[in-house]
Every structure is written in structure tokens, then in C-alpha cells.
Length: 153
Image (cartoon, rainbow, N blue to C red):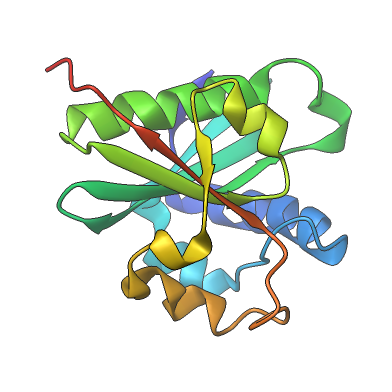
């Protein structure tokens, strides 16, 4: 079941993100940052346990980022990541967002949703505020991808 994240979900979300952050597969986020961005997150819950998370962060009036997509290793290959991304794209449409981007190592995964690769320099400067805190900055090796959304509302 996918639902909006609640306060009690922050620590399980943090643990999920830490697992992938340690491996260098995504940017780990400190607890304070997760509390600040709680409303950006949705979670996938199974048997009262958070096993997946994803955030849609608004950047501009027509631009949002899909970020912090993580699924517990015991639950991969069950389409949970797909459901979380689809949920974010629906939410973006509901807010009349016409462009969604992501910075990812999973290029083929995001291509399935119609994302295309772009140069990171094509993204607005505003999005780099989090990048400055990354241990890989300025030598980012993630791929920037974007999807244009045709609004259906």
C-alpha cells in the first residue's frame, strides 16, 4: 500500500536511505532534513512495515524532482519502486507540474517511465543546493534525466 509519509515513518525512511547511502547509490539525508521534507515523501507499507519510500520535491512552479527512491533489499523485484515513481508522477500531474527530473544511477529504470538523459547543466541552479553537501561534489557521477508531463487535469 502506498500512502503519504507520517512523522513515525521518518526513522524507517532514514534507515532505508542510509542502507543505499553507505553503498554510494544515493545521497543519504540527515534526520533533520527528512523531518523538513516529510510532506514530500510517500511510503510503501507492507504488514505495517515501511519497505519503500520516494519523494517528490517541488523546485519551481513547473518543475519537481523525484528523489530518495529506496526499497528494502528484501522487497526488491516486486515492482515497489515502479509503484512509488508512478505515484510521484501522478502527484506531479495533480499539482500541474510539467517537468520532473531525477539524478540517478538507474538510467534504464527511469527510461521505462519516459525519462530522457540530459546534461546536468540544463537543470536550474537552484537544484544544486543539496549537491553542495554531497561527498561527491563537484565530481557527481549521477545521470540527470527529465520527463515532460502532459497534464491530464
